[in-house]
Amino acid sequence: MAAGRDKVIHLLRQLQSASCRCPAHSHAYCQAPSPITTDYAFEMAMSNIRYGEGVSKEVGMDLQNMGARNVCVMTDKNLVQLPPVKAVLNSLTKNNIKFCLYDRVRVEPTDNSFMDAIQFAKKETFDAYVAVGGGSVMDTCKAANLYACSPGTDFLDYVNAPIGKGKPVTVTLKPLIAVPTTSGTGSETTGIAIFDYEEMKAKTGIASRNIKPTLGLIDPEHTLHMPERVVANSGFDVLCHALESYTAIPYNMRSPCPTNPINRPAYQGSNPISDVWAIHALKIVSKYLKRAVKNPDDREARFSMHLASTFAGIGFGNAGVHLCHGMSYPIAGLVKKYRAKDYNVDHPIVPHGLSVVLTSPAVFSFTAAMCPERHLEAAEILGADIQTAKLEDAGLILADTLRKFLFDLNVDDGLAAVGYSTADIPALVKGTLPQERVTKLSPRLHSEEDLSRLFEASMKIY
Image (tube, rainbow, N blue to C red; front, top):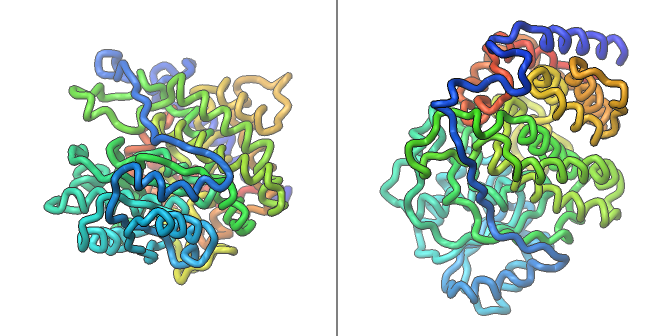
């Protein structure tokens, strides 16, 4: 481990010292273009949230209160026989809500699996939707609702540019109630739907405030059914949501400034409100994630992580994420043979949270020069002693803190451990380049060469 760690540190130092193309390198956030072209406002949008043990049983009453007559319930084939789905269906039956069940959601959805769900939604006239599951289920349900409500729309019209046309969503969607069963994506709070675009072997998505759920029912009892690795990988998504949204370029340094509020992106850059949610989520992760992974009976830890997922979702759903997520999409999309433990799927998979966290030590070493105080603050929350730390060492301190955190949770030793080699770096970089929606929120400008170095530094973590 020592030799590998030395090599990683060497690569991270190279990244940290790489020449910055920013004309104001010494300033805290220096990616900003001319103030005339940058935004001047930020907007907070989130779903209504209800938290409580057993709150899933209220979903039938909620639909009744909405006047719903015919409801589409979406889940996946693993969850359909488990208590979370049964609790929701029992509530619908008890309250005389007619429903149709779709249980073919693909874990880590693709454009084709989205289309299958969309076709299901178009076959009937649904007046409400319920998603019971993790991010894959909630994102699939958002897409089904969107395209069923705009039947003449081409699929790529709403998909993020440059892969799709990125058109704003102006149609009115049906109510959607999200019941998350994992503690990671925060999708119950956001207007984001992510999928693998199979033609390019890379992830992309749809981003609009108008597709966010109407209500998120946060029932912590559902977390008791999560296997160990699902808890860990979901938690890593929370970790990176918090870290990336807190270190993203500030909203008033993001360009272009929208000519109309409808064009203001969902991911706007860090702002004073999203910062509060990100930091609070990070503190919960630091205190409870290891406990939640190592002890399935630790209700306090698992319940706390369920709330942390929602907190981080509110933060990143408005601020955005940056390089860890941008680089994660090709890591997941180009997977070869790797099959993650505790995931009952019929295809190779690098779970989203794992694909995100594997690059985190390298990424935050690279970005720290732009906002070192925030990187040091994050490191301290995660357990580092920063009393005598120097600002110029912020990146390495946070990277080392993350490395220890991941080692304690038995995370695979970098990209090499999930099937990648240096020969794959050009393809990984190519898959990252279209992710402008998130990568442009990085506090530090980066070139293709920088991305190559980041992937190289992430081949081994320890």
